[in-house]
Image (cartoon, rainbow, N blue to C red; front, side, top):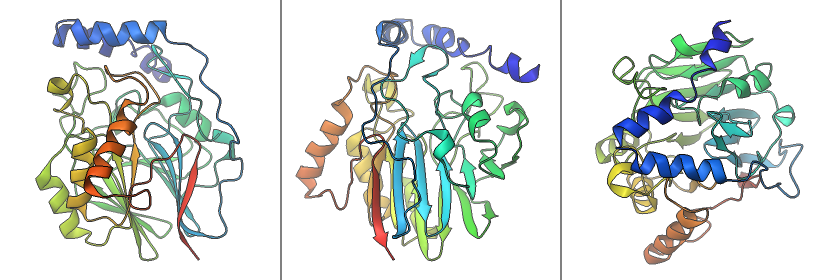
Amino acid sequence: MRRHLLRLAPLVPCFAACFALGGCFASRAIGRNLTASHEPRKVEHKIHEPRRADARLAVLWVGHATVLVQMDDAFILTDPVFTNSVGEVSPRLVEPGLDARDLPPLAAVVISHMHFDHLSYDSLDMIQHKTKIALLPPGARAIVPRYAFETRELDRWESYDAGGVRITAVPVRHVGGRWGIDQAWRPRAFTGYVFEYHGLSVYFGGDTAFDRAHFEATRARFPNLSLALLPICPTAPRDFMRRTHMDSIEALDAFTLLGAARMVPIHFDTFINSDDAPGDCPRFLRHHMRERGLDDDRVSILDIGEQRVFLTK
């Protein structure tokens, strides 16, 4: 019963946003979602066996903030969303780049925060037998239903050993609520993570605004990051979005501050949650990459469903 009640809540943030923003941006976003096609674009040549025997470090972008990370023989899944919509109001533009049933056994699932496009109950239903643990930010466990896996909260700089993979919660700048009206109740329910395994280290930013101090503090503790997964969207309207989201310039600045060897951009072209049109955010990113002399080897823009091997055995 509790799970069903929790699923009745998706429309609340839309109404809360309308009040908070005077109706302008929220009404535009809701209108674009209502007129969007409810048939997501298919992913061609979808991978059904994501385990790469030749890989030490590989990434498969499922879409939005959902990424399957392979570090040698260990797999970590970030912010799993496999449904055709989020919040029952935002249809998926492109189908998931990997079917949930094709996931390998996971060392852990990590959830960065409680927004509907990052914490999906139906998606957790689909993958609950793929993992033994889901890690959450402080305050999130109270709203997560019971599943077959254990749930555990990690506070800032706290670590958890998941079958040899060391996962550490790192600071980001976002908001902690799920329904818009509950941010004051869970003021710290958002986080980034660093995964460490066999000398490799991967940063996952989840959803964050630009915060120099946070990125510098993370680099001080993890000075040799192999890879950074960084959000580049939504960007518009910028005066509003900059409070909680990075644009492509800020994402590249964060990449530099983190000192990571490589970057994969995430959180774009999957759902409509801003004034940005599909294709805007990666186009802006490519422009700023050229300005900084960054090539595809340093900043790899993946298609949904694409898997990239960064280090081989």
